[in-house]
Length: 115
Image (cartoon, rainbow, N blue to C red; front, side):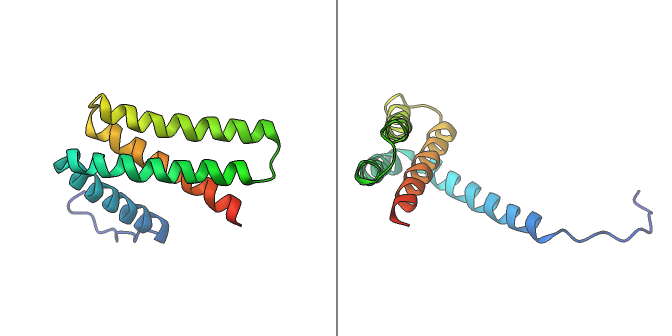
């Protein structure tokens, strides 16, 4: 295929954006991995505060009690999973992914109750 005369196709915008998010993720993970002890300490405080704010907004909301308790359960479990991963000194990849999951889930709950 080296001597092929076909014209290479350009990538679509969605593929370009995916590469951009992937690049940001890799850069953030590399930084987290290099200074894991410091970032884990800060992240525990930050995501715990964000999780507790999400729980507060959730309990102040006007949802059905069963749905409220289910969402509260997931907020608590995801936040505690990250805290446990830091304390158990799991691999940086697992810890970083749990941090991202915790922040995104708590933020979505807060945004859903603000709107």
